[in-house]
Length: 79
Image (cartoon, rainbow, N blue to C red; front, side, top):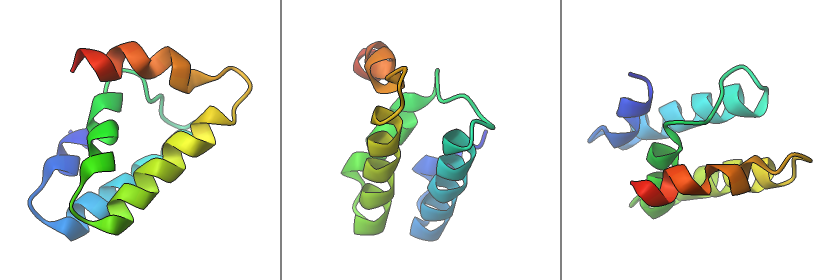
């Protein structure tokens, strides 16, 4: 349900949802697998801050030693 808010018509809802998800994912409180496509779509959002936050999330994920971004590509491409 939380990922569905990333498609809300309100920019504030999308931005705050992405900020919360970014915090939870980067602190290993939530696994990103499965709904990563919703976050990837934020890279094309009309709001610059949302695009930047999504880019930051993927940037930080790419710095991790087990390289989860590489493992998430099939989920992103399949959507």
